[in-house]
Length: 177
Image (cartoon, rainbow, N blue to C red; front, side):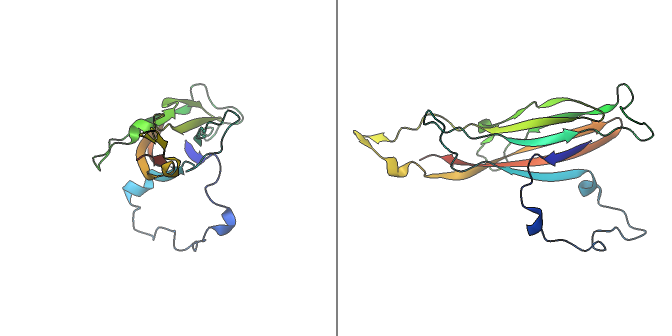
């Protein structure tokens, strides 16, 4: 199984290329098991989403694409039952302030048949209630005051006995006073 960004987070021309020789494992040494089966990804939601025709602002979801390759030795469609499973779990906050209640994952778990892909949507829904009226005055200048918040989602991708972990850091701007 594999996990990719739906849209590249940066233009490929701007990525610094590392030497092929620097990323190789020297002969006789083993790769670090924590990094070998764990991938780290980051999804950042728009700080100021565009207004829709009703004047509201809905923050568009971010996507990851999960796929399962056809097993080795098979041609065309994979064998019956081939493919993989995925399971995404929101992790508790270590900072004491839990912002994970504003984020969600759909679908959080499921199956991916061999040779196909599935899109997983990550959404950010800030609280709707924001009272900027104080003693009859509307404090519109304070509308954009807030802070960047984050949550971590850990996903497990399984194909038979093989397992890999994907850690997704979700970041969004929460307007609050």
